[in-house]
Length: 336
Image (cartoon, rainbow, N blue to C red; front, side):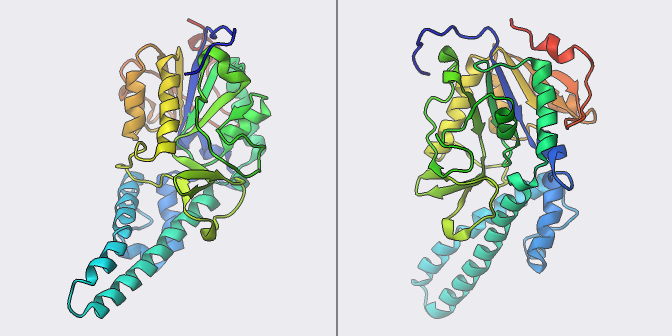
């Protein structure tokens, strides 16, 4: 991507990919939720309606993703129910049923959307914990501008905040100051040849808090605000194991930039991610030229690493006080 303007491609080209485990211990007043935690929270938010869709506080994170995905697909069919009802005798009864179903599902979908913004907004982050955790990680890696690309499937802005605190100039494609309003423009964010134009590409692969759909485009609003239904649908890919990030142009561009980053990467660090996302796992398997390290808690890190052939497993409970064997990350991340 892009044209060389006299800069040398960095010897080390590191891609950092984070999942929910990377943000969990960075919450203010308590950890940020994993999928199982979010299931319990939403069960309370939905009240009696939770049982109607099969949601319970005891459901596993994997089952929660499947259930939410199925519910959202089902909710999108009510408009068709109303329209086809016109072809049926006694249409009035069908239309009334469809209207009530649409009203109830819209209400439930908005509760889910509200929960996303409440649980993962900047307000939920302990900024000192964010700075300490990522500051320590970046110090181990000796990160400099031009040799890093960051990508996350999280909705929260913790990694972007950490990059700003380390003067690594994160670029998400909004061309605006933090807290401003802009339209997302994902064009050649990743360009190793020009060292990303003195920026660090920050790819929110599943969208983030503060993003709203405006037609086929994404409007970027402040990441510390509650969800406002009047502003439209949030531009986040809600839990669904069958979600397809390549359907919508702007999301596809984010993933195209990830592929560009991985195609020329020398190192990939996967931090706190289960790799249950099949699209992300497939992209990592394509990255044959990079050495891949999976950092996750010791009870699951081996299983996650085994899903990517040749990946190195690094036991780590990421957070503001995480510990790691001296020299381990430094040795792994040396230029090749």
